[in-house]
Length: 235
Length: 248
Image (cartoon, rainbow over all chains, first blue to last red; front, side):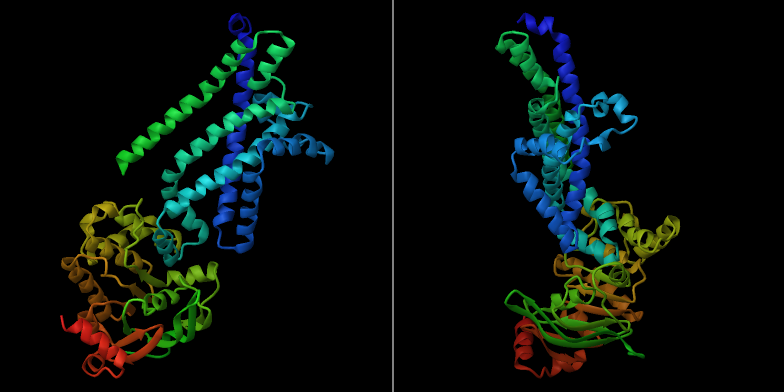
């Protein structure tokens, strides 16, 4: 078990990198997922079709395949995903700005994949709002956007937050795949480094990285339970 | 009662829900200041008829004009038209996350861009008028059904509509609360508001309506002043309907 103490800095570094990619991917997926959800419930049929197609593609493909497309397809198309080298942001999240693009590729794949699930979680919340609410808002002359903003979304949020949390927890676990698509030094790739290159025994290393993931996911799950309990009281 | 051009004109309106012909060639015109009560057995299409007037239900064939303009397609012009037509629902549909006063001021502030203070003042006056000024800061779930429906009427009136649509406004209420809602509607009618009212309240139809429209199987079967309709219904369908509801 000495590896946990001797190589604590390596574990901590892996934890920090995984936390970074998860934080960025969660924000990206929430934004993109919200956009896709608005498309899917919009009154304009072509926009609805775009949203539905997006969800059908990214919800039904394995994340591994999406990562393949990001890590090998984007370079083949000549893209280094340089649009993610956002000035300012890349000083906090240094991997965003590196010449090696795999952190950005992994981030793109996670965002695209997770956004489909975020969309569906948001939409299930919208569907939980009685249709009469939106009808009353339309009858007053509120536009589609005003209706969402002032009537539907404030009420759908309650029903969305717990499924959204589950989506983010799943995303944190899914992020373990990016280490196998060129992202060096995240929590899961750390295991590979320490066992194959460092020669450390497998089980203690696996326990170390498991603890790393649990530190991220368990508090999030506990937070969701609290939110759920508070809603039960409010109801 | 009727002056000038009619406010609402339905001409040859047809609508299908799948194979169900829910509105079968319905033509109806409602004059300014007129109160038209629509009655008929359930499933006769009367609620659907009411909901087509502000295009909550789009129609498949025919034309509907409001204040001289054909109903626009979905978008900004339709939103503007809807803001001029008040609607009151069977299930109240008050915004559950907003207080009664916020329910009443949302439309004026967001759609009409009124100053919040002015909208608030007018909202309170409207709540006072429907007799629930003391409930302004409560949430819908804290009110009785009758109070909620009166709040919903105030919410619709806050937009200063040219016409009001009532879709079975008392059908979800306890019997003792029906009166308080009908009182508000009767006073609106006597002030000259143009109203289309789908209801089972025959008393209201008798004393507040200018015309009674009877619907059955998606068709508009009779259209007559209430005294005439209740005394001498012409169609068998209407006679049958009235005999069933008036014997008890």
